[in-house]
Length: 375
Image 1 (cartoon, rainbow, N blue to C red):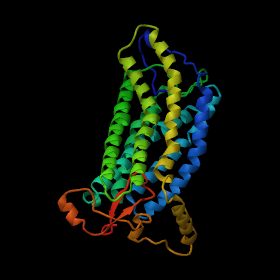
Image 2 (cartoon, helix red, strand yellow; image 1 turned 45 degrees about the vertical axis):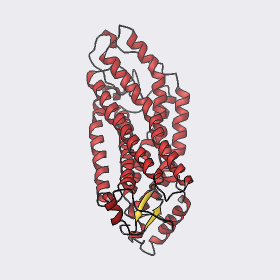
Image 3 (cartoon, rainbow, N blue to C red; image 1 turned 60 degrees about the vertical axis):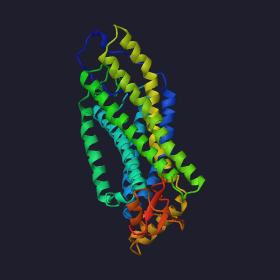
Image 4 (cartoon, helix red, strand yellow; image 1 turned 135 degrees about the horizontal axis):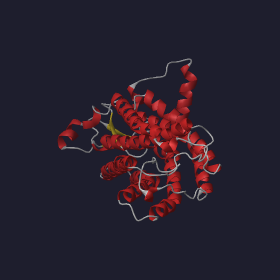
């Protein structure tokens, strides 16, 4: 499973080039299996916890619940890819299964990336513009945004079903391995780099930097709380870079090599040289699915308490209707009274009602100023 390319009528320099399939097989299998073992239970638990937040009309819970479902779907493709690598890169199922597995793999990768952007943007609005955003941060808007992302990414990646790499033949048995590059697919790779990686990276960097600045200027937080927010904020950006930068940089390099073709023979050498780094980048991209639930949800300080409350709710659903008061929109606010949100003097005057510090289960990465008036 390598760069998404399709066969095309090109010059002699772009003829088929057999990749060193034996290289990196064991490490990649270990990564896939480890990610599956860690990511599957972590995401199942996160789906349950974030669904409780969705029921409580938590906006961020919509994005986190969708991200967990996306990661679960993504993880479901790993057993097939692991078996494929174990058999020496020989696909034992049909071409339709190859195309469907590739479609799920790539679609969920980019849905996950865009949902991470939504999470960071929502946190930024909640922290830096909590008063202005109180009318914009609605659960129905979050649902609409999520559906739009899923539909758009799913439609764009239907091109996977027309790519010849998904057409498994008895002679080759390969599934989405590099064969020949075409102008269409190289243009697609350029778009994936810019829209699917570079722009999301810029958004994550800007929003998390702003979140960090807002929290650092807060006078109501202790030094230890600020330090925790700082490290978690940095971890979000670093995780994104580690997981997705190698994959997209190699995509970009292959696209550039196609646009400026070298002399005969060197293109094949380039493809062979990039094969092992690309397998490593694929393994790194899957790690994101295992770390997401730990970093975004399971790192919360009150995770055990919330889990107990959730299990209690499940046990009581058959006997009592679960409470749906607005007080459940955030989890267990502390009794620390803090100043108003960061904003203009006029906004500070409007926000004179008592405010309380809230660390939400679904928002462990930042601190949110929540007014009792609008909670």
